[in-house]
Each structure stands twice: as C-alpha cells, then as structure tokens.
Length: 89
Image: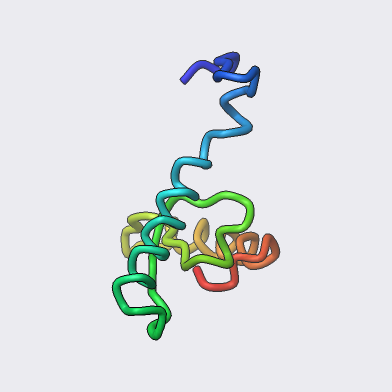
C-alpha cells in the first residue's frame, strides 16, 4: 500500500494499517465468548495487533527459524512488546 494512501474520511493508511487485525482479533474473542455462554475465557492468538489488543488476546511474532540470528532479533522484539503492554507474546 502506498504511504500516501488516503482512506474514506481522510484517514491515512498508516493510521489504520493494523485496525483490521485488531477488529478480527476482537470478533474472534467475542464469538468464542458467546459460543461458550460467557463462562469460558477465550484464547485468541494473532499476528496483527493494534492499540488495545492486549485486552483481547495474545500476539504471535511470526515464523522463526532455529538459529542465532532469529534469537538475536526475537529477544528485543518481545521485550519491546512487553513495554507496549503486550505481556502475553
């Protein structure tokens, strides 16, 4: 998507890029909650997240290989996610 893409209402794409993933995450959690009659806490794992996603479920950082370069990148990524409020990643 071009950086200067403008959505309906004048919003820039970079402001809304992960909103779809957030709403998909929220709808999945809501559907599981309704299916369980509100008695079960759903586990939803997503790769896309947005501000407030920490209230809904966990975050998966993507596919990693079992080598030192991936480990070197994943540790700072997980620590940064924790600082941003995504404690379950």
